[in-house]
Image (tube, rainbow, N blue to C red):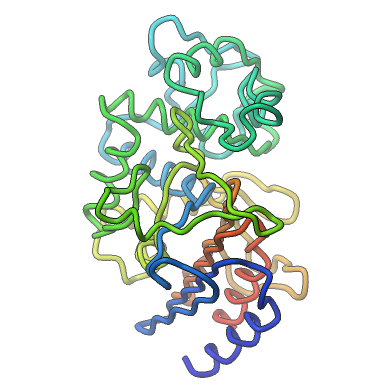
Length: 338
């Protein structure tokens, strides 16, 4: 780990002063390391908004519920929507797998959200999308293309997936994540609503320019980006894709999410995960082993999670400022997996 530590410290030195708070966590084999910079309430144990990394939890929930026979990948989304919410058709019906692989044909945001998100609600753009408004938006938002074809990244689609899975089980999205993923894996710091005892450990988000900003609440679209977590919890979650996981059931679900569903430019898409295939190219060189990764962002945070299953290498980057963490995360992941 000494060589890796030197490499990470060099990468962080180049980015000194660019972020208000930053945590980098890595795990290779049995070795784990944490690095942090800037003002954070609990150092590397601080809790961050993880944004779209939440989508990998939502996809794992889907695969896990499929294993248990609660739902099927090819179930139509309409089957689990509340009475009165009618998903418009374009070609065949949209399935749960379509939502998880960003092949639903749905736009990035539900109808009526974009303008408020850019104006009056810009500090917390999803907070007003409660169950009632989402049901209305489902009926009003038409797909842009037929499902099952071209990949088009959709926060709306993945948020809708988390919502209907919770409806199917008869619980909230947060309780579903806690009961089926967090509790079996011992993730004690992964929440939507952080318990009062731990709220002092939640990092304050900052804008791109470094000004403090308010937290985001994704309400009924929480499955797209509503979770908060720590670097340690995320490393344990990533271990589902290595041989270190203590949950064979969830490891099998994770393996299903990592199976490629469709090409997406030079990358591939699984369920929730983006993938660089063997021989695929990073900006600076080609990769020899498959890598899974996802970035996340909210109004005041950026995040990155990546894993190279073949090498047992995991990386988490959490930043309490709205400046990209993806390139740093890929640099570290590439160094670990050489």
